[in-house]
Length: 307
Image (cartoon, rainbow, N blue to C red):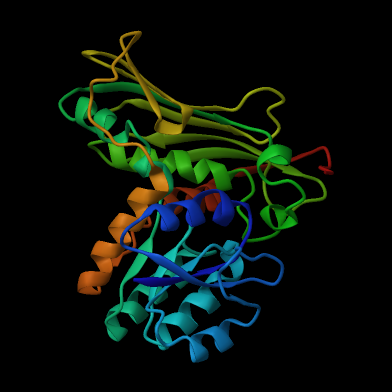
């Protein structure tokens, strides 16, 4: 299938382009971007022009920031194209629900991707937790925004999510591996005085069986990033590190548990299946937690942030 990639930034060049090029299912046939391009691929700077001229392209993959994503997705669906959305799938829950309704009405596939759910050890962690009583679970997600989003002001603008841009990756894993749903009960969000979104956050969650579930997010980590989830159960302890790429059970790495490598190749494999049936996969559970944090969280003003 031919696919157009819209928004040629770091995530597109680092992840989407290699995944598409390595897949037998896909051919990168066009890009749309004001600033970026991919060598050897027809480049457009006008999305509507691409849709009009390239009726042979059935699928559009959107790697834009979340705020403009709704408009592009709506135009693609109206043009009868299947749509794949980088995370988060939109700037608000309402627009995501609207896109899902539009896609169903049009009979096209729509995929809200959560790449961290495709990390190597997520299926193994889910299987291990399935028959155990959870006592506590702690998410620690700390990285340096200057390293991962250098100069990208949109992450600190309204709709950009701030530290929840990486934090939603942790929440996508949490909502996949826990056998029981949780919901947020409190949060403290640290907003730089000169920015619209938080740079750090702590959150606590209600668990139906009384487990202590919490999350610590920080976008000013000076050292190596920490992307870990640690669970204590009645039958032992599990720790996922490297964003789900490594699993340790009772202090012993267990690499025999199932799970495949390659987050983005697996996303594109799933998209190929959705296109076959025109299905909609719009799981908004990770985004609901972020929305709850913004509505329920206590705002704390901290020092201004400058690049």
